Image (cartoon, rainbow, N blue to C red; front, side, top):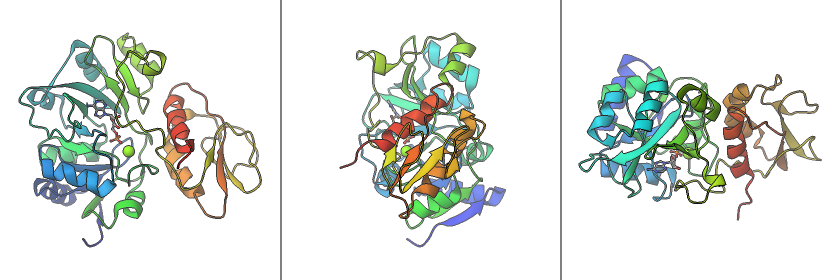
Length: 317
Ligand code: AMP
Ligand code: MG
């Protein structure tokens, strides 16, 4: 395939994207979290080509993206907690894992063969416009090679998948910058499968729901595809560093000295989340021997940042 075209979001580029999706092709598009690699979620062939383009293991399920809450009724079951969360937050950086309906038209590859399906209604206007123009759910993982740092600009997508897809819609840098929060909402109490762009504190405060953590209770469901090593730059990553060692780049947070780049000088975890992946890429250079990262607090989006950093730092074989 020839190189991907990068196009700003216009009525014409949205129509081109919808047309490519209808023909079973892949389109990268911006969301508020990271750039997604979209495919027709109801087409086995289109979804299969997503796994192939990314080199993603097939046991790792994808998220079905929708352009209106009403779309859910045609393929998944709203439990009471799912309904409450969707009404409180959607469109938002939160993904709800629901039970598939018996006649669910979404490819089983999206669900990795499970009887559940993960659903997200993104708040990014360009994303919603593309999905609405297509008119059906769009499956999308992050638009990068599996295991590497997630893309938060169209340029990042081009560097990773530019020779494998026809079109990248450019909506500028992603505002949230980390992937969506994933909640299993099939039971009364939501289970946190992945920390992400919607803070657990906000979920509890706005809905009064009790969020359960699988780390703290081995009996709770876990998510397939949450791999120990993920989001990884080429260089080794050292966590909770107070200063850089000889030859290391230093990714700082707050009032630190000698930072090569600072995720947020004013120690704001939301600003840090928005910078995280882009700054990891900028520091992933052969002139350094590793990336040392300041401690990041666990509150608000700090939970998601620490989750991504832990996986980025996991020893690779
Ligand atoms: P990504 O596309 O890389 O943002 O990853 C989506 C993640 O959502 C997967 O790695 C899973 O951890 C989670 N997920 C998606 N679908 C399901 C599902 N049916 N059940 C549990 N977790 C899911
Ligand atoms: Mg990903």
